[in-house]
Length: 190
Ligand SMILES: O=P(O)(O)OC[C@H]1O[C@H](OP(=O)(O)OP(=O)(O)O)[C@H](O)[C@@H]1O
Ligand SMILES: Nc1nc2[nH]cnc2c(=O)[nH]1
Image (cartoon, rainbow, N blue to C red):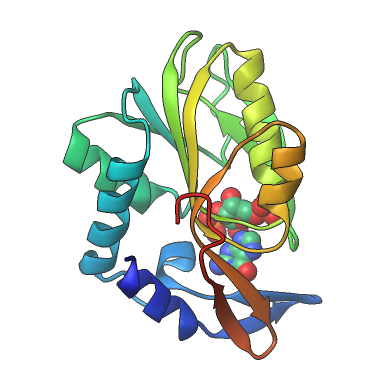
């Protein structure tokens, strides 16, 4: 299961961003090209294993966009993107984003109080991005049916579980300067 994803992750090159070993993969970077068969495999899996009884798919710029697009096309469910750009629309929510290698702001638009959403992202590492996002959505009384992330690395999933936030991953990996290895059967949905 998820053989195209696992095979491609094992080939992912590593670059250093400061001290952080950063893997590069089509799903997390759009580099090299995204094979439609990979996107097909991933979106089929998500649709089968997640609660799709939702009003909206919500994902995060940039690399949540192809995932949300693929799921939306297969299900007919509309999607919104949490952007790195401010729009100053009424009700816009600003949150901080902090990853292992960057800091910035994210802006939530396009979800309403009482909406039921599926939250999708490409990778979780420290869990910082999802922690702030989930808190902001809960404060807005948005119901999250599932949080699904393609690749889990680091202890982000465990950190969030300790705070009562359940994140499902398709594949969990270990990243070192030498490359990516797959941690078999540790993903929440595996
Ligand atoms: O668990 P964390 O440590 O918070 O890291 C995860 C975040 O890192 C990536 O975002 P990035 O800002 O690199 O966005 P991109 O999609 O534009 O590459 C990814 O899309 C997650 O949102
Ligand atoms: N592509 C990519 N995105 C990330 N987001 C958090 N960590 C990583 C990483 O190692 N690679």
